[in-house]
Image (cartoon, rainbow, N blue to C red; front, top):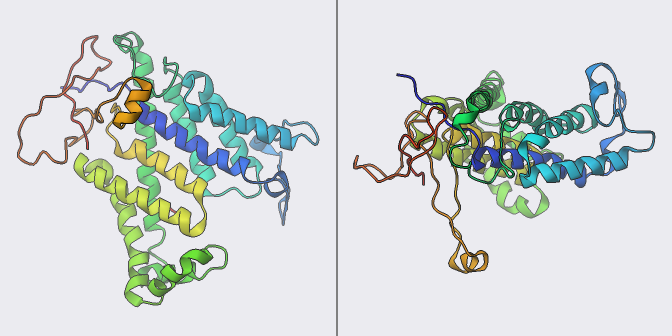
Length: 346
């Protein structure tokens, strides 16, 4: 029997969109125009407006208008990150992401990941009827939008498959190199002038780099995390939560050590879609003082079982039944199915 298609328009996919937008926004807001657009040896002056790259917003900018265009893109990304009108901001987000990756001289892997993920998430966002991507979908809205639900869920599945292959390739591509195989690769990265630890962290990092065991762990643990995330779609949900936590810690460590914050935000945005159950909705429990200010509170995360293989509460080890709230699916106007609350490198 076929499972009902989970409604994709939740704040989980909204969180992924926000993280992707913030990564690109940081690149544009905290880098000067002269840094982003400058000559590159053997390539020429950026932006390079040839072939498909001519469609980038910076190639359409008037002469001496790159600074104004850059801040206009920042404004667009602020709106995307806020979550307002996902269906209206989906294509502008994808366009700005493509323009940054193809148009600036310092693009990195995070910009490339953002182009792919923002384009795939546009499939979901274009059918999103909500005013804000943080809101819950109104009761009864999904059954009247079955085609949009199917397209939106397909977009999320494609993101998950893309992230799985990305981590698989990232791990496997390192293995033929002797430095990764023998556990010394991070010694070279750690002593790199461009990507080594910043001054305040060197007293903490240098003793680890001086230890053979420390260097081996720094080299091999990321490989284990990457291959685990590559296989996460085949694992029970409780293992995905552990891999999600490991992946977030891994990418934040790269950001702190190497300064690759846009890359970290892009990858964590992809991890949200990869590791959270499809159709899950995340609620944040506010402190009592904050609830008093806003006049309302929220509940714990509502993560539907049955929308993802092995999705269930990590603490449910005694196989007892919990009372769960219903989750709407595209196949019925009535709530159906139980819900189970749940708790990359270049």
